[in-house]
Image 1 (tube, helix red, strand yellow):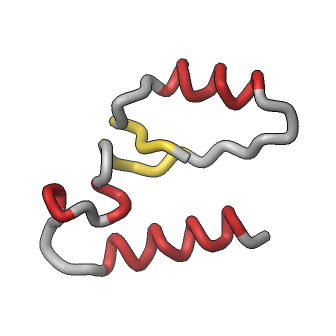
Image 2 (cartoon, helix red, strand yellow; image 1 turned 60 degrees about the vertical axis):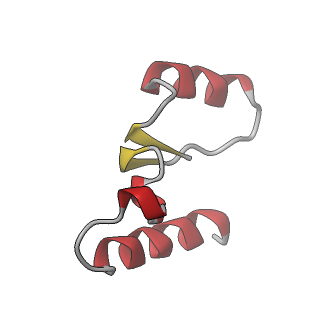
Length: 62
């Protein structure tokens, strides 16, 4: 799981995914911590974080 503007580039993340057999890949809009509600990146309101939480739960618990 990574953000589309995260520390690791999308190309690097995709390569890691390809190298790990049986892995899944999830790319979420936002930079490092944005999509998880990190205290230094909080934006107005909790709704975006609720939506991402639902996506993460679906990703981890298919």
